[in-house]
Length: 237
Image (cartoon, rainbow, N blue to C red; front, side):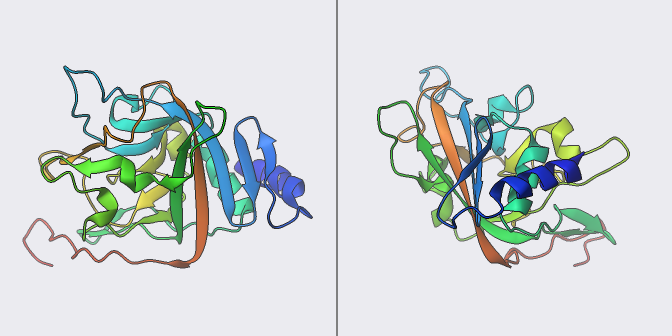
């Protein structure tokens, strides 16, 4: 099924000018080294009773992790995977455990930008990391020295199908092992492993339900995590 989608998408964009995007499906556009899609704000970080919304995801699919994700997307993860392939990106793999050690996600590096669509003219695209801040310092994610960006990890296929379609993991902040686009750090989604400290930036994140547009720009290179390897259960590196 995924290969059929890729073929159809490739047929649509073949021969298109490099600076144009082709709408493949409602809410999904592809061009050379660019993918854009639409969604809505999933969380309410402006309610006085719950001002600090802790995040594990940037973008999730419906009926999955909306309570801990900035955006709920209008497309399935497998469609994002296919669109990235058609735009020229090469997938790697999400975080994995090999010989007792965690191996960080890898693949073609991407940058992700976001803009709102609730006005006559949309705002300029800004890095999606600016919508996430540290709970204690108010420092934005992209200013943190541990943050090393995103890669097209590509989720994984198993006996049931495309894993991200079941989990809803399009773009993650913490590591799940099945996301389409993954961070290169190995921050765990388990609170007993890594303390949650990243929350939604109330100054930038609009109200819940606001329509938004995501732009993914492909950088044709791989990036390695600068975070040291985690130790195994015996305390060895």
